[in-house]
Amino acid sequence: MKLKKFDDINGYDYDLVTNDLHKDVQVNKEIIVVKKTKKYWLISSIITFLIFSLVLIIYLKYNGFLAENNIYDEYYRIENVSKVTRGDYNILDAFVEFSHKNYKESSKLYKNIMLKDNTNVEAYFYYSICNMELENFEESIKYFNYIIDKDDMYYTPHAQWYLSLCYLKENQEDKAVDILIKIAASEDNIHKKEAKEILIKLAEK
Image (cartoon, rainbow, N blue to C red; front, side, top):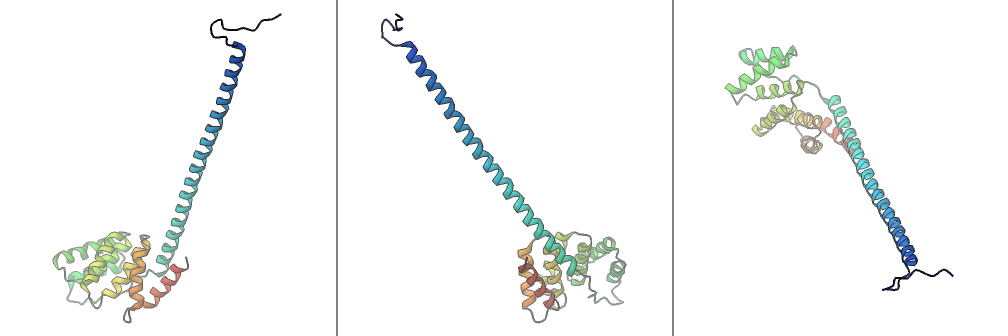
């Protein structure tokens, strides 16, 4: 007859205790595996969500950027609004370079005029147009705003129009819309019709 193993002091059944311990260990391992699986699944879900959100944001911004660039390309045209006279030799030289599409040289000449005479709004205007052609839009924005602040009766409406196009090109739609609304609401701005058209296109995006 096989006798059970008992601890002489405590009277424990070692086989029974060992089996129970093995079962507890196995259960704990399974719990750990389940917890790890849930943790990995949660992390994976979060990463997937973040990637999806990032892709969506990039897609929407890129589409908006393309739409605004398409509008810019459609509406941007250089207008001859110069009031240069034969006696204005410095302005005449700058305008000749501008007419020949030598925008870099023309911008230098207009800049020199601006440094000597900060009341010459025409120099500021054509300097800003030169920088649009050179894709220095921040510089154009700075000086179109300068012209608007001067409230020049002749050049301000043109400055507003080109400023709105600069903002579109720079993907600053809110600022562009603010300017376009002002143009569209003005009875005197010659770009009123185009401003309304762009506002409609932006609303339909």
